[in-house]
Amino acid sequence: MNKILFYALLLSFFIFPSGCASAPGYYSFSTEMSANGGNADAQYDMGLVCQHGKGTRQDFKKAAEWYEKAAKQGHSWAMYNLSGLYRDGRGVAKDLSRAADLLAQASDKGMKEASYALALCYHNGEGVSQDDYKAYELFEKAAKMGLPDAMCDLGLCYASGTGVARDRAKAEEWFNKAASRGVERARQALRMYE
Image 1: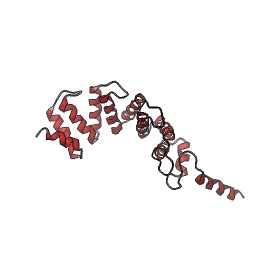
Image 2: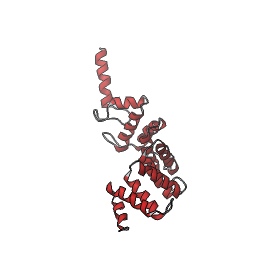
Image 3: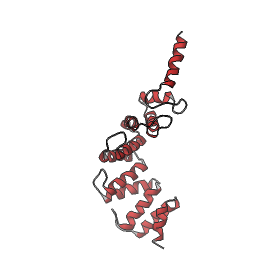
């Protein structure tokens, strides 16, 4: 009798999943259980499932909840994705300041994508006070970590003297690095120097 009850209960988890997890084998029940148990990687995975509607209905509010749980444990990709939800006002109230704060936290943990996105925030004054020097520093940080778009934008900083002294040689150097990694706008910028 206990065996029948156990299998009935187990089957009910796959037929009536809780949260956003659904299709057995896509994101397993064990992933959701790990997330509910506090595993930051599993919480991040659940956020992805909810944000993108993979195997379930798309639910930005639930995605934000899962990302928030993982972010509180220092998960940098959760911080990054949660910042995007705050930037766009999806599942949470739009809050550019909170988005920038999350990017800063992820950048401090060494995430090049967050450093680049935060550089754009400083460059455009979105969620933070506009600051060309801070934008330059963050473009440089992300570029030195190997992010091609950051290399191009760092080249633009040197070419225009935005946040740093104008330096044609350094601009060309960074444009070349970005162009060699497939950044078309870097190739276009190099044509100015021909």
